[in-house]
Length: 486
Image (cartoon, rainbow, N blue to C red; front, side, top):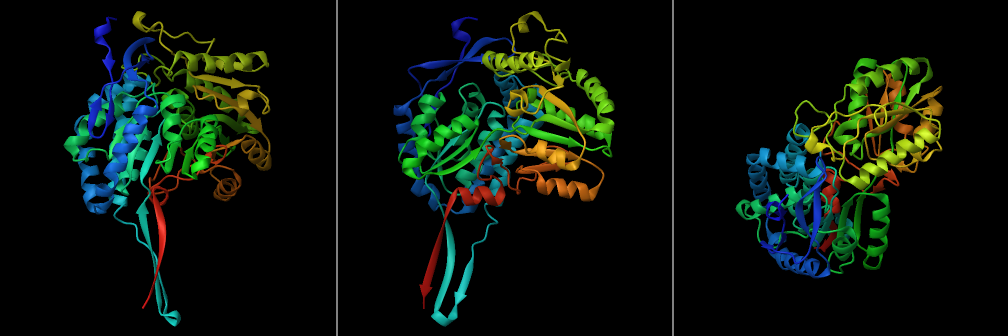
C-alpha cells in the first residue's frame, strides 16, 4: 500500500479539526494491513479539548431541552442520510460484516440520538408541600459539566453515540475518546457536527490510546464525570485515577453470560437464537453467550443440533452479504482467543467445530486477516479459565446440568453478572430463574431484545451504574433540592 493512500484522522476540538504530530497505525482486520493513521493524543490535546468543552458549557446548558433535542434530531437525520458510507467504514475498520453494520450498528447509532432527543423532554421533577412549616420543596436537575466518554472497539459508533446522546441532551459538553483501533466512524460523525448545529466545543473528540489520551482525560480535574464501556481491568485503573476527584462513574464492563436451557424449551427457536447469541459480531459483544448449560435429558440432542447449526454460521470476508461473521479486531486479540481454544484442548475438552477443526476458505488478499470460525467446546470444568474469563471471541462452551438449583449456582459461579438467557416454556420456572440469576439483564426465550427506556448494566465485575432512558438522565445530571419558605 502506498503511503499516500492512508486515511489520516484528526482530532476534533472546539468545532475544528486539529492535525496531530504523531499517529498510531490502525489495521483493516480483514487483510491485516495498515489502512489508517489515528492521532496519538496525550495531555496537551486533552487539555485543549477540556478547555473548549468548559467554555461551551454555559451556553449549551442554558438552552432548553427542546432546543438541544432539535440539534440531536438534525444530527440523526444527517447520519441516516449517510448510512451506507458509515456502514462501509464501520465494517472495514472493525472487521464486522457489512450486513451487521448496515442493520444494527449504524441504525442503532442514529436511533440513540433520536431516542434521547425525545426522552430528555419527558422527565419530570418532584415537588412536596410542607404546609405546616410554610414551605414548598422541589427538585431540579442540572447538567454536571464536562463529560468524559470512553468507548470500546466492538460496536464503535453504536456505543459512542449511546453516551454522547444523553450527555449533550441533558446539557453537558463532551470530550470523547473512542478506541484507537476503531476511530473512523467517530471522525466521520465530527464532519456532520457543524451542519447539525452543534456549537463549537459542545462535542470534542481526542483520538489515542488508553494509557495516554484516556489516562489524561480520566485524571483531568475539570472532568467531573466519566462514562466508560470496556474491560474490568481498565475500569479498575479508571476508578483509582478518578478517586482523588470524587468523579461520577458509570462503568459498563465485561460479561461471561450463561444460557440455561431446560428440557421443555422450544429447541428450534432456542438453537437458532443461541447460535446468534454466541457468535454475533464474531462473539465480540459484551452480551454474547459464552457458557451454555443444558438439562441432561436433552443434552446429547442439543449438542448435536447446536454443532450442526454452528457449522452453517459462515465466517469470511466482511463485504460478502452471505457471511455471518467477519474478522476479529486485531492480531493480538485473535491470538488471545486462539490460546483459550488451545487451553481447552490441553484440559481434555472436545472441540466440536471451528478453530483447528474447520478450515476457512478465504480469498488471497484476506489470507492474513484475523478470521476464526465459530467454535463449540464441551467437556470443560467450571473452574477452568475458559469458563471463568471473558474470551470475547466466537467461542462457546456447553455443559449438562441436572437440577434448577445446580443451573442457578453454575450460572452465578463467575465474577461477572451482565446478562443471562433462560429457555423454558414453564412460566413459573422462568420467573424463579430470572429472580435468582445474578445478572443485570435476563432474557427468556429470546436474546438482545432492547427497550432503551430500561436500565442496562451489570452486577459484580460487570460494572457500576446503569444506562437507559431514566438512568442515563440521572447519571448525566445532578439533583438539587430546593426549599422555599413562603
